[in-house]
Image (cartoon, rainbow, N blue to C red; front, side):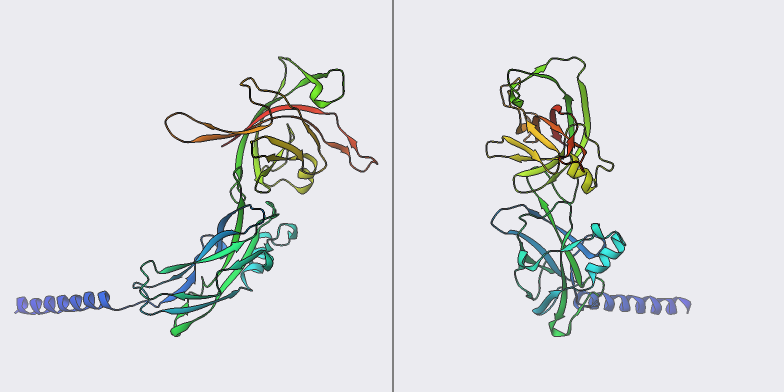
Length: 340
């Protein structure tokens, strides 16, 4: 008798399991919730945008649909500019340190492919990409720029993920020499030179003395992009308190700009109050100083080292309040910056 009862129970369990398997293969047991894709905390989505001059750059953000099956019908999604995340991000990230607050990218600096999006039925990927066009000219590498977006409405009675219906689309400017969001690290190797002048006071009339006691420069520099052709570094052996986040005063005092021409010649100029003059000349291999080069690491692969070969003199302000300002003595520098 016990065997009969046991057999009936097993048969019932198998029957229920079979029904469940059949239902799960043909029915949606989860809601079709639509959301905006984000990868960081505070619903931030970081998108790289190269610096340009006179044209917009193209990026994308994505609208996704949750659920175990794809949506069975076309869905119309309306977007709007979000009003919640931006202030929350600044408050939770920077508290009252207002100079560090993120900025809203002005609306005339971007446009979106459309604020009304069709999400097609039976989408295999279960997401659609929305293009956004951004004018990056003149954007600062020291600021955070956001485009705040949210899902306003969804047709067909479908809903949105309450935790992912809005995003902060962050513009991450970059060029061939540096990136904005991730720190671009260069190793700096060089020396402070001992020089004497020839018949004139022209900086290119200096004679470099072969001094075995040259002061070495061994630093790690974070290079920031400034425009399509330029990047910012720190001059010579100058120091900043925090390599990742130098203060504006430190940048004004000691930062220089490296602008690369079409022939890879580098023009060195001042970022702030530092005075800088490049010294022309020829390196041992016949190439000129003040040049950017990409050199093959080896003959096996296509990887390259990205290097700046620089020679210049600079001086910093010792008393900015004087009229005219008082400067420290000139320092003569020969250095190589190698991207890590």
